[in-house]
Image (cartoon, rainbow, N blue to C red):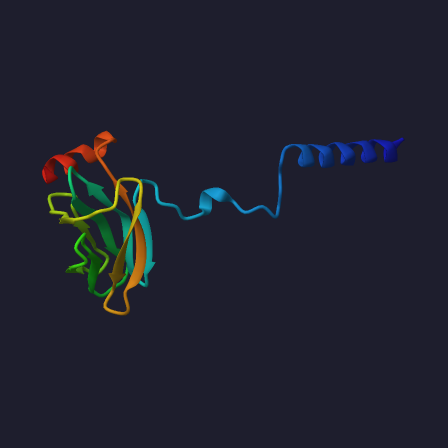
Length: 157
């Protein structure tokens, strides 16, 4: 009788474990890195580009915005570059202090304004560098459809 109780209890525990979706081998999706906003992100060693995007106003006027974080113990000379609608190089260099953050277009800083042919919804190529070879980053082109981007569009017009 005792063996029957142990077998029944073991079967119950096994069935409960299997039916509740428990798994020892699944990856946990909530631990995957993702961009929590509409912009994109990129890590270049200790330089981390976060929420980088382009906001497009009327006509061809556009503004590149984003944040750059330095997780290192030394300052980083960073740069971003892209091409405007006429093919001219647009390059901005800036220092990100050790364990610091540098915003472009946020917190009272100006965005990088240039002419752009791409339409909202497309991706535009920019290059991010921490002083070494630039790495390509495809950033979304947004418009003022969402309320949080309207102030940027108004600044362009």
